[in-house]
Image (cartoon, rainbow, N blue to C red; front, side, top):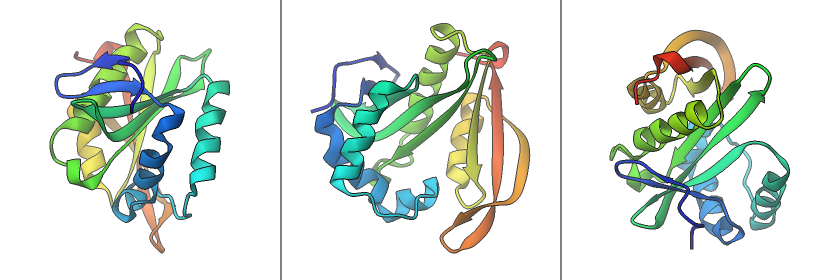
Length: 175
């Protein structure tokens, strides 16, 4: 069962990751279609996923489940890059049977509002592989602008692909 409600979007609830979420998160990161979008190539065991959840208690990052009607459908995080600069990076993933419902966009919009309003961030960045145009669309719908392309930077499913970098400044964010 997901943790307590942290915040709500229009269609999703964001809840803290709990130990009881290990099985869901393991299924999520191991799903072949999800793995391709996040560039994960190694299988993740239940023990590895549990250890990762435990390690998050020691960092300043934000790790949340994306839930719909109380059930987890994905995850997202806000990874503080440089606290003195006020910068962070976002990452998100959804189970494929929940794609194309606007859940990632809603969750990302709410996470950005939290980052800018409550964490006093100045800039949030996101990255998307050229092979994952849906992730680029999510970033663009929230207001991120493409800042550059790292040519053949990533190795995804056996090939080197471009990595697109996006950025959103606090003053540009339209809640």
